[in-house]
Image (cartoon, rainbow, N blue to C red; front, top):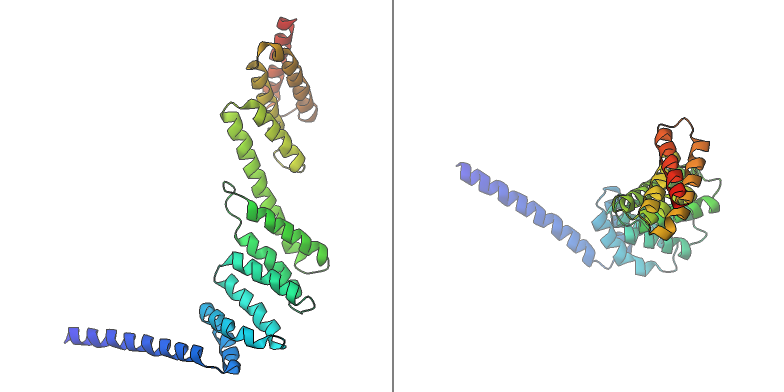
Length: 267
């Protein structure tokens, strides 16, 4: 008896699924653009984005030159975003903005173009192409719509992505240092101060510049050691002028003292 009930339950579920599928497939086969248009938005409101997208694709070509085309294309772009197809979403939002430059949806489409790229921004350890693309997109948006309520959000997202880029840059510089590629490490840390002038890690970065410079000088060929130790002293003086009470100050003074000794030995 239990097996029979179970069988009937499974059969009922299968039949219900088949009925639903048949209804959608029947809808897809219709030539009635008005019905397709209406149902596409109904599916969108129900968050059935794949079905909505499918119907939009069927109706969109029949609406070229018509007022309804603008709204369909805009929501069609959104279905890609809702389905997490962010590359396509960014493409379609940008294409929408170019196709309908005077649309009431233009501002939102421009924002969503950048926001779709933002969704593709990965962890700091990976390639940051989409992070840079999103930053550029948000900056363009803020410049284009300076009075928009979304500008504050753009700036907040940009700040978050710049922190990610900064973290990646520091990790790369630290890796050079750990691999004993001291010249590359020094250049990378110095570039960080140029690229991120407001960084909260400035003190540690300048400390690492002193350390990397000292190790570079110590491990250089004889002819270059004196010159490079002089550079260490300059970098140490710069650090101490800015952070005389730093927890790194004692070590930096010791490095400076050792570099002076080295220079005297060469003399």
